[in-house]
Length: 313
Image 1: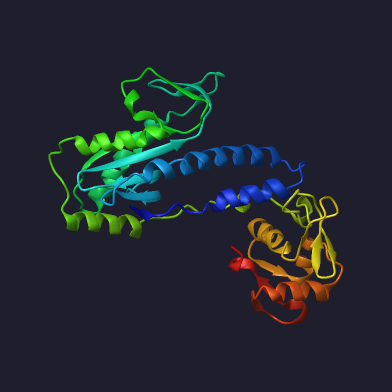
Image 2 (image 1 turned 180 degrees about the horizontal axis):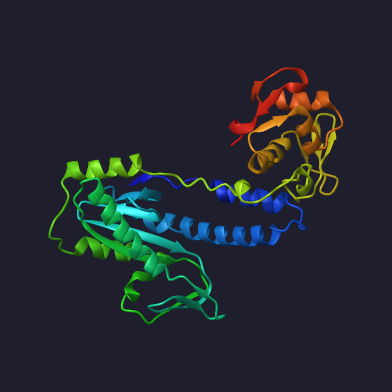
């Protein structure tokens, strides 16, 4: 049973908007593309957990993207499964190639080295034990897994913990094996519910904001509206709708996605003049009608009026 759903990543949304809008001469453009590729791969690994974990029973409580404070540091798991007898921590990966796990690091067949996710998930195990102790909860047996869902992945291991690394589709088998083990202690129904409630209560979402670390000026950002079918930009405004001269698609609401990009890059606040420039409109009155039709929160009057884009999700 899913208790906590997976969260939408602000950092991923910002990276996608920056990759789409940032001029390629910006000093951080390459960094943005690399970081986006890494986050998208990580997201694929996380999403690949959905199907195998759908075989979990109602007694196996699933928490996605939990981020907790152990009293000293934060730690976050891609998935945590809580039962009366055991807890399972899952670190999800999406990496191609032959992957060699040893006691020091993870090495891919292209000779690129990575931090060993086995070490990471074991550290999270220790931190979860500290978290349980911090909140005066008993600690059931805690197990760890590193899953990889890439179809072109081959796993090689030279470590005593090689049973921790598996293909994602093997998760149901691993979970079923846990249910066949004998455990010295188990949580009461009340303790299970109390820990479940506390996991939700003490979750601290990560809100990494790239705008605080990357200097983005209005001149660094590509303006205009992108076509949702062929990605051509800028769309043209004709008779109350947006028209793509490349694929000839029309869309009356195409400005919404552009304003979402604006919000992710520049923040919630926008004025008529800024919206006019960003959407590449010639008329302030047309811009005003577009903004007011979105029923946005407003403050001020006339040229000092500000619109707040926070309701655009």
